[in-house]
Image 1 (spheres, each protein chain N blue to C red):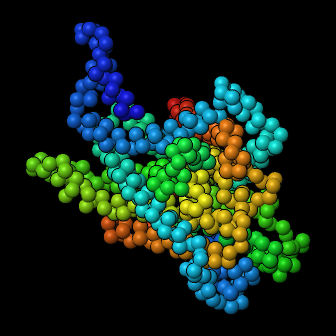
Image 2 (image 1 turned 90 degrees about the horizontal axis):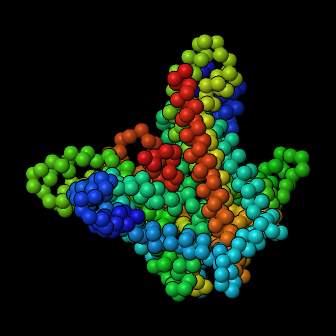
Image 3 (image 1 turned 180 degrees about the horizontal axis):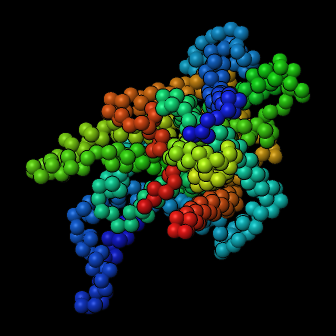
Length: 288
Length: 312
């Protein structure tokens, strides 16, 4: 434990164990990336010879992947827009104003993160099915926003809390209108948070499976749903390449968040990612 | 919600002289610019979630109580607690318990190891924990399917080491489901526990040691009580998240590892049995609420206990 002299064997045991856990977390990801370049998509690991053919197959004629990819990108873009609008207004209301029933509003905003996703997906299905909106990108994006907006709200609340309110007051006292203050002071200062919120909203939607599964129709299928169907029913070796692409998208997105935070001067000792606000759980007791 | 406050205030029913004080206070608050600004900004998210989150859940509840020929009934719930459905419900609880216990133990060890590392190393290790969290669970599950197959890496390594009994059947059974689901849940427990452990004052442990307490005593009497709220929090939240989890059990489990989410999916997509699916969904929801309520009760009990400890 901390602050105590620990025995050598204890330390070695804990180190080896921790390394194994890290391997446990990283291995499924590494194995996908490596296998996607291997000649034998379902075969031995490490592969005996290397190829790019699975990636080429993705965009071959008759492939179902490009349609799924573009649908997912469209849905994720729509979700990002919705979630940023909701996130900006909600964070402003929760951080920068007197709000009656503030804790109720805050609880409502975070609730989608702990409510089982099946329940959310089922409810959305019951909402959109009678409206004949199954398979519509808008419907899927509206559904994804339920999951993405709490994350955006949390990130933007943390961002707004980090902006000195006196800067806004100073601008206002010199005659700047509310809109000017927002545009010239708050918005530039909140930029890193906005970018982070946008990126997390995008990947939340891009990777989301269950709501898409309930809201998609036979011919409009998002990328994760397509991957799932292949894994469960078909055999299509290029699914490894798609999975590797999904990994690449997530890693690039996280790297972008890291870069933007660095540029935005987030010099806090939070590690490389704002874990408390992005892990997607109302951690502990912040409901007051 | 905020909208309802707005609409109730102008409705002054009685004569103006007997306006009760709370209403006038609310009116004054509403007249305040800051409050109006807040309501204006809170409106989009509240309206949005009311339509796309609260209303759908409410209609699920209604559907679960509706009989096939109209009228109200509880027989969808009775169905859910019978025969094969009951077994699925119980295996959901079993798998969730196994997974959250495993995530809690592994997460505890990893988080306590990280909390004594230097900041740079701790940052790097946490990166290995956090990055997988943002990579699609579907993809990670697929990775496990490749790893755990009969000729997968894990079995090959065990066979090469002449591990007795290798190769093992690691897929399409409970072992596979628990391994896969644990790797999805682990980042949550590690992050929640790490946040608590970072807040532990090391001097308390040193003080206990200086007064002659042994390793085990310090762990049991000082460290464990300090991190206990975090452990409870992480365990219950992990359990709640497992309850409604679909992907990994559906892809890595056998017939005995069917979870409630899979059953709901099947009833909606294949059997068009929306009422039964709704009842199952509401049961999951109630279990979730029970878990959250338990957390709240334990938290206030813990606070009361600490307060008593502080005064005596």
